[in-house]
Image (tube, rainbow, N blue to C red):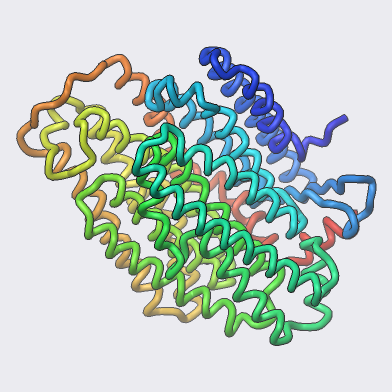
Length: 493
């Protein structure tokens, strides 16, 4: 019998392979994609229950015991991220039915989405640092296909930058893993943690910690390594941008969080102080970018960068409040960014432009769109009881508890900047006199509003269900703050 733990990785992969043979049958592609994702979601939800009731789940492939075999590990953090990723992908695929265009659907759009999800879920679940690299490459190869889908000039230009940055990052990843292996003699993440604990954290391990921060910082858009993101993410079609914005940087954030709580915990005065400084600078530069543009895509893309800084600031505190807040805020940001990108995609579709200066009066013609956008903005900023509130509150609490007062104040101020940048879209697009709109299909508009509305509702439920969700967040933060739980589950299975 196939272990439940592997299904959220295996199912998207198998359905992607099947879809490769149905290139011209769009209806079958759509149906099979949704079926594959729904079955994967059911498996992930079942896995959450199993992790909650029975603790960390592990499987070692190839009949070799850990740390010699390839381990997959599902703790509360990884399974929550896997489940959220599948849920978001389902809703973005629904949005894609009308927004991506049949020409792109015929060129392996749905297989690429499922292959990317395979890599994302694998990266969240692997217990082997080299196989994290392998899963990163799976999701990156799929993202290369998605970013050039359609072959527009701007896509091709930006894809070259995206490809070069990730090739360099991947090469550095392999070198860093090799350097780590030469020091500790193992690739199993639990065993690496145990070996480092035995020797403390000599200078070479601190160097490796900084190299990993460089590698994952490129993928997660950490300052000053985010330079590639605004251009590359704004080039592909809106459904692809929604997928990238909601999911891709989160894999980099997960990798930093996992390594900086499992491996590199013996020289926190340097490593985590560096992470704190870079996270605050990331927030500041994201705020500058969010206020500088009048382009819808760029404003929300820079809000991705702000969220990266806020989440990693919470991680860098290494206390219960900061870590729980980072996890809560990470899942909130995945949901809210997916909703925001779909909503601005609908705005661009309705108005025929992404330039705020050429919009106006949509509240009179598309009232439901205006209200959905406004609720999403309130959730993004963290107005209680919406989903951004509790995560930001816990992160701020963690910052004050750790004595990082000025940095915490900057995190609080960033919320005002986020509100200003997002409300500027509302003021320009929805207030004022209506501008002449290009002719559009109201039926397509209603179909596109469905997944956006579902995401907004899910984010609201996520916010108001805080009391029910806190035990799950506590389980996730316990694993991060007490590495021995993870180590014992893997090495003593």
